[in-house]
Image (cartoon, rainbow over all chains, first blue to last red):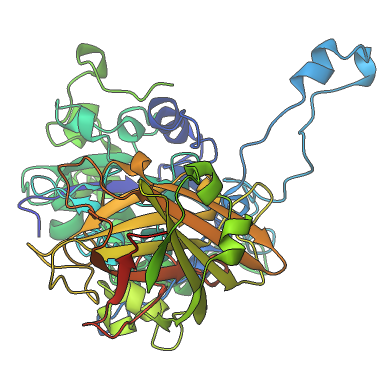
Length: 343
Length: 225
């Protein structure tokens, strides 16, 4: 057990699916060889099959009695290969306008955001929302427990889960064990790699890039036990932020404020407030039964804010002042030098 | 078993698993067993590989030669698939691999890959790095460390539905690590292991030889040709 635990809360009501988080992460951490297909941060449309494709059916994590649940390895194609384009042929191949820039080596059939905006439901009650995902830096990390060499480590000081690449032998038990499939394998270096919660930034007081760059102010960052900061207030005090798939048994430290969409239309075209557009059972399948209380709290506090202008919870979620979202990790990245892997 | 003395045969000659010297060498078939599931260090490995699921390769033919300077093991076994990790192969596959393990202190336990203060050392080959070897030491499960990996030479040939792999090193090695030190006329304790890549075997999930001497087999390095 780590002495302290860093955590993140993502408000799914504010995510607009712009992928700025994903690109911020990619630019900073996964540009090296062997990392082409890696997106430590992904944003997927829900309901959807996700990335890697159908990851929720790949197993891993723990059974209710705490035993390791077997999982399987995701293939690169299930994450989505990095596409290669025929730049040479298009620009210099002498084909003129007859040629266009197209993907080389066959047509891909999946990628990290393949089923964007498909969602579910029938018009006019169709629905979707965006689900950004990073490593959950779990309190009970299946990856750490799976490694026969102790090469996956949970940092004592802040609970960030990292891979010690010097100890890693590429056995990939961590990748099967992670039920969120947020462990990646570098086929060039033959080691596991993953989201590091931007620890080189954290150590200098800078929030992770995915949070800091988010234009929607979706992400809150901070220590789990900092009662003065938003994480504690959203997770413990208001209990409106919940882990994804708590039944996997790993105790994630990334929490989600569940989405509240407008109510459904009835057959007569009137709004039917009794029927939520996202079926409750779907949200329960993602966030567990506690999501119903969380939704009720959010709706009540929205109403209160509307009626009186006062709600601590709504003010927190609106995040009027961005600095208040980061539990003190609000130093500008421009003022620090951050390690970046280079070719 | 004996390591036959073939003076004058260079290292490159020893590394050719199909060379005549190996046809003439006496070989011994050694039975292999799957590493016990209960000895795997983590519950995730045990859950994925319960008893009976480990140990795809059941026997290996072993011959050993030395030229006075270098000693080479030739391991040959049947394998329906050459899992080399080459492009186009399944990217969730694992390479075939083989190793020779030595007790580098007497009484070093085989089943647990050594123990604190009782190291073992392996010479290792894997099909996706064919042509080079690795040398590791260990003092217990999950503790292997690469030590002067380039001292070990290893080359495999896949033909006629099986692998023939030669793993070689100088009899003595300059290393501060607890690597094997062999000498002519002396005996050493060894074991062999094979990993079947197409069965997902890697790490402690492997077939290994359990010999008569506290788990070890004995190797005597011939002094005379």
